[in-house]
Length: 535
Ligand SMILES: NC(=O)c1ncn([C@@H]2O[C@H](COP(=O)(O)O)[C@@H](O)[C@H]2O)c1NC=O
Image (cartoon, rainbow, N blue to C red):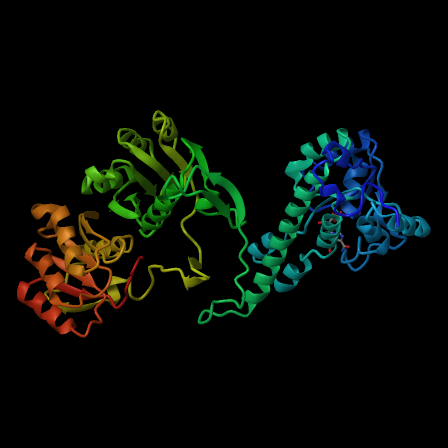
């Protein structure tokens, strides 16, 4: 056996220069669903002397651009059949893709069979994920499972010592430059192969995940395999601390915070993302115009108002000291009035579904503020938390009927609240969900006034909330506790501060003692029956 360019593996030797590993591209197989940039690519390849072979509508676009192209049927001598299920799945195609051009035996077999090799594959796959997302029927989704495409891509990637494979229309310019330079180097082909296998792996994970999800139910929403694939979006400056490397990955859905459009400001940091996620979650928990200001995942203030500017003034007033350097989330487009208010306060990030006329101009007067547009609220059905050696998955906590609807709450002590007052307590209850456990939150006039967060007992959270509200604001406020009071002591702290009413889940074996404390203090107590721990 003689070998051209060294035996397999010989190209890895350090003394072989990158230039020597370039492989000129003489013949390319192009089969793309996404036709972006196809005409320019075909023209460029043709101008560089590359002969093109292509499938159905890809070939038609190339021919219409005036570029000579051989239809794949001409190569295989076999028609495209079964509604496109079989086009490139043919030995004449795959032998041309898989022949290791370094091996005389492979070259000899191709000669005997009259098969010409390919040096380049350009392919992208049927839009399976997008078809599922569009709500298509099962049969329509199945039809969008690409079989021939991944086969070509995998074959070319395996055979990267001989073949280059490009799966991303964004890489066509680089491809043409490489062809002009005499072909990709081996290291480049290996990089393309890695990208190609990642592409097909993500694709297969999406398909496998879809099949697995077909067997899940509302009661058992966990598929047998969590086929999650994330794609590196960008490396961040550092992680939670400067000595931790960090990066942002996206899940391919093209939605949510990871895909938010940054309109202004410095690069988002790891901690910016964490806080923005918490702020976004908090703001979208409310139906009325709402602003949430978050630091270290906890609220400095949350408020609703007639408009977002009013909501922001109220949210900021909760704790102006802490709001310095905070992250602001808004559940409506940012008005110019809100933007003017924010422009005066040092703010790390603002995220909103959109920005009205004049708002961006006001915000961008500040160099440092990061301005994000994220059109929608949080939607993930499940959430994942890594644990050493595995991961925990849970259904995402949401406000839900009946427990979060005040109409279903049980009056346990004191006089029933009027509709207006009940709405105040309901605001406190919703806002409390944004506070890290143990959480006690005091609110008045649709705004938080005192937040006690993250304590390891509920009494300290209550004391913190009261202290941060101050005596005047605590008196007559509406209080919420994310979980039941295990003893009356935490409740008594609130009662002594003069709160008007408390909402808490109930369910403690000592509920009776808490209810007695409420009766004694003349504080209205509602049991919600729903808990919202947030860790
Ligand atoms: N069946 C096959 O042999 C086959 N070969 C290539 N494809 C796919 O067909 C698409 C391109 O088809 P067209 O050129 O007809 O638009 C590409 O997304 C490619 O991945 C195929 N389709 C599906 O499996």
